[in-house]
Length: 164
Image (cartoon, rainbow, N blue to C red; front, side):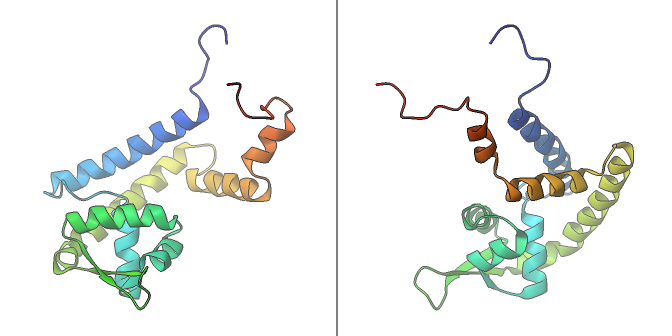
């Protein structure tokens, strides 16, 4: 590669945008005395409020993340005193339940969710295409044809194991 690229690599750019968005929402929680609360907890909390206790796999499916990602968030939420985990009917299953602390924080969580939703609508108005619409379009395109297939079709990807 020669010179400095004009643009950040896509993965770096996506992570940077997410860090900015999440960082600002997290700052709002910290200003309200909830420094241990992460924006990624809110979708899980909202599902648990709506559906009651759930297995991690079911919680992940309802939120739209992998079971591993849900499990990591649930572990952080447990350390923050927001959920408990108990064995389910299957030895591998863990049932997640909101704690009294989580229920006590619901007014703040819901107010921040509403404020963030409104702020995102305002941001979307400044963009050529609403951010969520564009991201859903990207997901749909990748479901139709994964990036790995697209990379392979370039003929530029390595075809065997790396040299020893």
